[in-house]
Length: 245
Ligand code: NDP
Image (cartoon, rainbow, N blue to C red; front, side, top):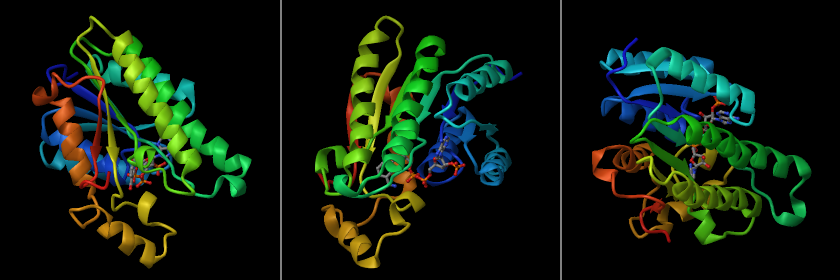
């Protein structure tokens, strides 16, 4: 058992932003629990890549919407590494439709994974994180932008921001910070899949920096909050989006 290093659980780390966060935190010296729901091969490949670069990581299958699976993941991390110091709540899905055209499945799936999934992991983290811990939740800049067809998705992320602020207060006295990162459009499957090229082009130019975010941009912001330089940042939502809002 290696108990020297700080231990970070990154949910939804098999690809996209979560994979970049896992890789970056491993590079910064954390032992990383690479959570995934379905992408076992991708998660295992990422763990192998991290280990080949001299880092330390394990894959951990758990659907974040299942509270028992989340508890088992924390148990496994504690058994393997002695404790958990950092939770990055990154797992998420996005399904877009106007409110009038949103069916129950669209609503239920996003609430289950984005909102209840974050609740499930936050509850375990609130009970188990070691002194000096860090919690970083992934919100979205659409909470501020409020674009048409994002109502349910943005509502789940607004809920994540609300839990961020309240948990900050509930963890008073334990030297644990709770913050959220709210990315703008970022070049991952979640953003790119199913969008016409014209929409992608428009959103690429929307921020004053005139490019899409890359997963590494978001990973850098998470690494700041998880690392020593972020220790005085607490209860904040940091929009990492090139200035789109
Ligand atoms: P991707 O679709 O690229 O990746 C999503 C990740 O979440 C995958 O690793 C997937 O794993 C995992 N996942 C999905 N459902 C579950 C579940 N039930 N339990 C555990 N893991 C799950 O998304 P992004 O990387 O783009 O998004 C990451 C986060 O950033 C999300 O919370 C998203 O809302 C947020 N965000 C993204 C933006 C963007 O433009 N990309 C903008 C603003 C916010 P698997 O395939 O193995 O199930």
